Image 1 (tube, helix red, strand yellow):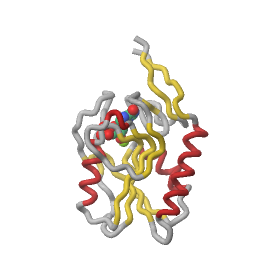
Image 2 (tube, helix red, strand yellow):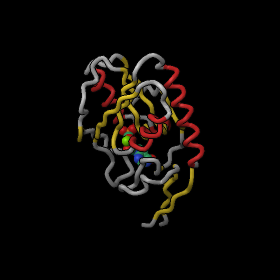
Image 3 (cartoon, helix red, strand yellow):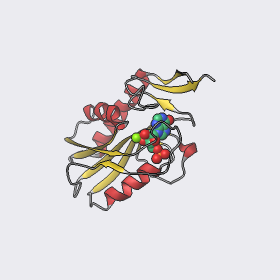
Length: 175
Ligand code: IMP
Ligand code: MG
């Protein structure tokens, strides 16, 4: 089955939105330091672009959890593949994700991080598909709300492809 990519959000639109979120976070955390936690691999492109646009001091860490594999539906199974290098205790943490879909991954991750005693814990996602939510997750910073379509680019993949697209596109399948 071949697939085509239709542009949903252009590179300019995504960049402008990330700039705005960076400015917002810089205002919200004035006088403090933010500890960004990237959820690999999808969140990596977004986190790098976002971190460059935050003017307060920033530290970074990375975590990897199991996701869809080649399927486009959530299995509901969340497994930590790579844990953080540093403790989050007493830090002002922002989890940076590519997309919140069913909410299962983030709900699990936020509970786990909260138990480790950060000073504060917020969630920032580039994309949000609210129509698909199964578990309620409080999102503090959202790039774009998008319809229920499978998207790629800016870190998001389909079977590990298309992460490097500098825009967000919808995957369309030719039967
Ligand atoms: P959730 O647990 O259902 O919210 O799914 C979260 C993860 O599923 C995201 O971090 C992505 O890795 C993946 N995912 C969900 N929707 C999409 C999509 O449209 N394109 C690519 N990956 C997706
Ligand atoms: Mg992800």
